[in-house]
Image 1 (cartoon, rainbow, N blue to C red):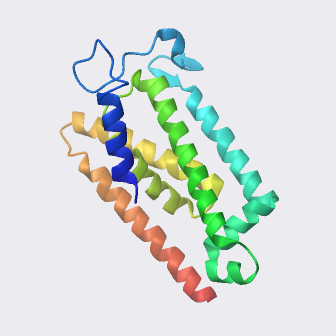
Image 2 (tube, rainbow, N blue to C red):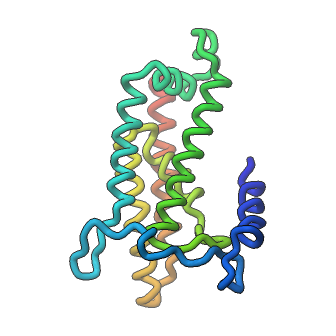
Length: 198
């Protein structure tokens, strides 16, 4: 619910105190080459970014945290049924607040990696909607850390494929249609399983 607040706040910052002296539009100055993350290796036009490795490490860490810690259990219980979790003695409000803080921190880290590895500067509107893509990734993952990696890879492949299709004259909106259909199918299958189990 605070998306608009955060967006307008960053707009004000990048247009004011953080605006680069050499920039005409709301943008920071270009990062020095020494401050930018370089790919781990490069083969032809293919680059393997450091951010992918960090993302995999975070996924593994979250998987361990969810399965092996009390806080992870409380989060899973709250997500599955907050009323039952509250009756079991879990402080669901605190758990949800902690989940929002941690997920916001991870999203912020993702933004930092995007800027330092790919963009080279922070500017207004550098994200074409990664946050909303993340909702689809999470929905397809279904609460599974491994599923997050697979669904994120799927989203990335479709996004890159859409760019390639536009070069061939095919509307890249077809990828949005495919993603929407996949999400609807997965949601329907998951709902039907829960209904049978219930």
